[in-house]
Image 1 (cartoon, one colour):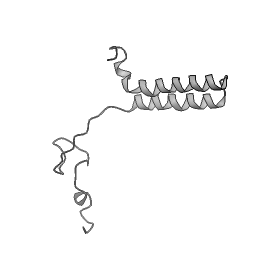
Image 2 (cartoon, rainbow, N blue to C red):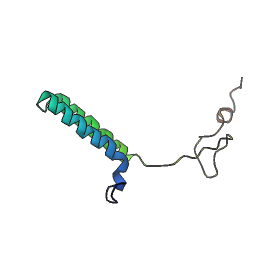
Image 3 (tube, helix red, strand yellow):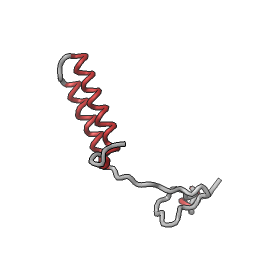
Length: 89
């Protein structure tokens, strides 16, 4: 369990931590911080930032094929209902 101060960042901690580990390993192997390490840093930190910015949202799918009440997405909607003008095979 994370401390309360880190809980808002929980899903971004994994890519951030793995980026730090990858940079440390690369640096230990090559002995210098150069273009490869910089690329890993930028890619990993961008992934962590993007992960943090994507909101958490649960999606409810009714296995009977109809959207759950109040669900405005098309998840759970049968394909035949998405394209009513297209002939079904």
